[in-house]
Structures are given as structure tokens and as C-alpha cells.
Image (cartoon, one colour):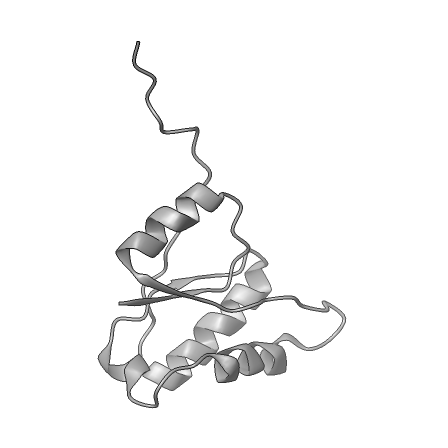
Length: 102
């Protein structure tokens, strides 16, 4: 399974745990908020190395960008390409999960 990661990763350890479970495709998501979002989002997805059939045959969960209007554009563009709304991954900050044993 391939995870499209469009968000900025805040915790490297968490990202590495996800990367052990699925293949992660990072999509750089720098955005000038003074410019229209839709063309930029299309360019991000056009730059993703996907086969034409892959988005319609493989599960394609996405970790959305944190800017809500960009996330909406991303969902709309993905929906137009795959004809369904993809699964959304929510990575949240968590406290250090390593247990300390004495």
C-alpha cells in the first residue's frame, strides 16, 4: 500500500513507524497563499510517480496538508482522479511511547 504524505512530519519517530508498515510517498507541499491553490495541488499530484491505473486499483490513503483550504483542494482533485474519496490518515503528536523499565 502507498501512503501519499502531503503534510509536514513533526515527529520523525512516528513517520518511521508508519514507513515500516506502508510505502510512503512524500509530496513537498510548499504553498504561496497569495496564489490560487488548485493549480498548485494539481501540480503536486502530477509530480507524484503513480501509474495511471494505480490510484484506481490500489488503496491510496493520504496524510493531508494542515492548511484546511489546501486539504479541501487536495480531496477534490483526488476524488476527480480516482472517483472516490481516499482514506485519510491522521498523524497526531503523542508523548514519547518508549517505556522505561528499571
